[in-house]
Amino acid sequence: MLQRVCPRVADHPATPWVLVVIGFCLRLRRYLQVRGVMHDEALLAFNVLTKNARQLLHPLALGNQVSPVGFVLAQKAVTTLLGGGEWVLRLIPFLAAIAALPLFFALARKILPRPAALLALAWFALAEPLVRYAAEGKQYSTDVLCTIVVLLLFLGADGVADVLILAVTGAVLIWFSHPIVFVLGGIGLGLGFAHLRRKDRRALAADAAMIVLWLASFAANYFLITRHYAQNHYLNQWWSEQNAFAPVLIRSASQLLWYPKALAGAFEYPVGLAPALNPKAAWIAWVAAGGFLVGCGLLVFRAGRALATVAGALLLCLLASALHKYPFSDRLLLFAMPLLVIPLALAVGSIPRLAPRIALVAILFVYPVYLQAKYALHPPVWYDLKPALRYVQAHWHSGDALYLHWGSDALGHYYLSTQPRCAIADAQPITGVFEPEAGYRQAHYAQDLLSLAGRPRAWIVFSMDPHHERAIFEQILENRGRRLDVYVYPGGAAELYDLR
Image (cartoon, rainbow, N blue to C red):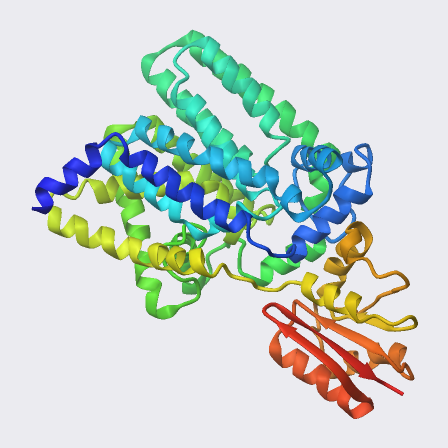
């Protein structure tokens, strides 16, 4: 029966649109979720809302934010027209995520047979990182869309006019996406490979002119803005601690294993086929990584220049990682989602027997389906400052003190300075000082609280707060005063103390 049903489903003209609608609904559900801004969102939003367009042409000085200047200016234009609320800040990423769904299927169909393209689209529609960043005011969704757009233009570039369109588009998108340079590098290899095989000198000359244009655009962007980000000590140190940079000199087995682990890790996040940091489920990511490599081998015979692009883009990203210029990890690999999923779908769709193919599909879909079914009903809230501020606002007395526990400072600046509905008339928030090297210790908490000593009413707000830190903080507070009120909610807490 399965042998009859599966081809009918794969061949039905409505099937891809059903998957597109599912992906759209998941992203819309997350976009409409009543959820405050995340920490990095707040930092970027504060830059966008408090600086003019000319100031935004320079590196963002607040909060170690690294965002493409084109994306930042687009955010500035939208917020100027529509205001600075959460939905407006997330509008461009949301629209990019929606546009990417049908465009990705069009891309997959240029490379894959229809059943494999449907598999790729299903993974793309259900991937939790893609759903999450469709509803965050950061550039990761637009990175994915930029990748898909240039790949579509690349696969349709048969003449000099097509190459010219691709050249101009790539030169512009360099200003809107940092990792697009890796994809463009892979495309240069792919086009050069195809035109060299055809011995098309005119096309090779167009390829060379295209690459020169891209290099000029990249050089202008790098020397004006991006080079300042590459020298950010805090970000380099943070990503080094996450082991996100490729080792250059292989001196141990662990360094050698970094590469296969990084590939398998990409199928945990951002592809989202297995729960990250769960050793019991790690084998699923390894199976997916193996399928990806098999799919790359199959691309040799089906779409050689597509393989050159996939391999070239990922190798350039690894090279940048080895030079400590770009972390090969986490959300910064979201741009590579199409590059990773298409070879995997080809490998799975090429399994000749139906039963093992269905078994492997079930293994690789069980986690994404479970996660989206769960989050469709109860979307995650990692932390949120807005409910705490509204509670404090409703119970505020003139003369109260407001202390924002570390991590809440960026969120507090965004809401108190730019959102009138959360503003507290005479509040002058005191923020905790977080030291990245040492973390937070009880001595730091005690030092922070000296500024609150003797206050009859002091509000303490937690949002980005591991539970053990809040417990330590509360212990200090209870030794120095008396708790008058507490409001705890998913994602944070607000507590009122008498510290006389």
